[in-house]
Image (tube, rainbow over all chains, first blue to last red; front, side, top):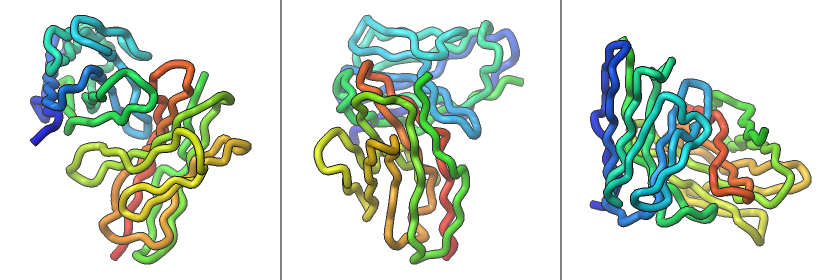
Length: 114
Length: 113
């Protein structure tokens, strides 16, 4: 089955710790995205990558970092600098970086900071 | 700043009722418009999209949406809802000047059997 996997499904972190959220896709998509979803708000873009070894900041990149060393993988690190990291994180991909391309989503990771 | 408004955060309907979910955006130029849906326990998925042409677009599962440029709206409709339509619905707009989607806050739809 083609799709996007995210792990773990639930993640708990102590304050001051960095954590890395995994996102893998086997759709052969060039573009990948990380979104944050908070209750009562729309999805907000954290980072996106148009192609391997390239990525750009989205609207709320502060306190986050990413890498794109492989086409199929786009891990997100939530650093201790992120002031309010408790949220639901969604990874997505699309065939290319175009406004016409449908984005496909993973199941999400719910991060809770204790 | 560009924004997308979904005015109804929660909607409760009985089966067979008609549905209309509102979506308004603030960008005045060319836009691409999307509705995504998230069924309970499932991934967010595309319901329908509008790029150009006929402003009335049809999507999966009997949904349709109408683009009204003068009203900056892209409302989602379904003539007769089913219990299986219970989900959260998101409107998203691409302003055209870049490739970033701007998302509405979502509408949680509950259909009573």
